[in-house]
Length: 232
Length: 41
Image 1 (cartoon, rainbow over the protein chains, first blue to last red):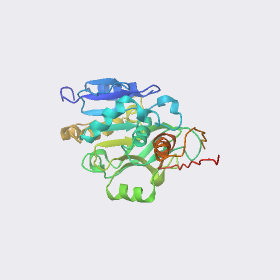
Image 2 (image 1 turned 45 degrees about the vertical axis):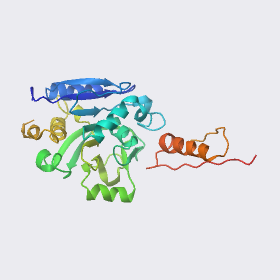
Image 3 (image 1 turned 90 degrees about the horizontal axis):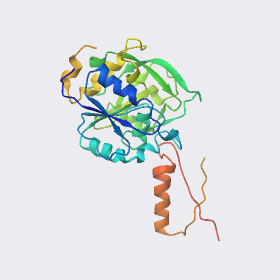
Image 4 (image 1 turned 120 degrees about the horizontal axis):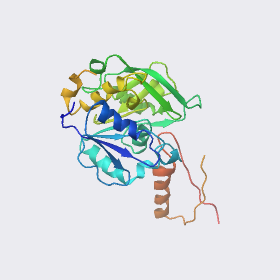
């Protein structure tokens, strides 16, 4: 995909620890120009996709993502998303986007009360033109590593998710108690994506799968449809 | 559960500040509730 002209920005918060994974997914995995944006920056610069990576931002104090949502960069992310910019939150990034109100719902402690670290089979939902079984296949296999991945939303919110086709992925074997086995959602407008599984840990030959490439391409295909036609 | 004591008078402005603090930071209304009391002096 070199020369595709797609530019990626990866946010860094104190406590982010998957920022380099996300960077590698897009730079090494997809060959795209990728750069970091520090959480104190108030501008994102020129970016076609903003990635909010996983980790333990601000030590996960109070609630996961509750402090990071107040970082200066999040004002820029909010503006970017409101103008239709594409945002992908992975794991802690998903939690941050939910806390920031950019995605519906919330993530609470796993029902097992244990940190779960394993590779999961995920059923792909029909969530619109960029993210659906036609592009990704019926299932993808991605790693998870979290203690707070138990997705919650009220009944009216869940109905909205179903009606608007906002659910991206569901666990085949629910590892954390998530309502409806939900592993990832998008916003109603369709430009903000969040998921607990890690596409950024599934793109090298030594990883448990390489489906992260497909997921990254699906997200990028929202603005660059030609991306989804390339083979993984 | 988080329990905090803060100093202030029972005024509309103070209640507004408390609501903002509780709603936007201390709790996540999707999964949590909050309430506050003004003890009788």
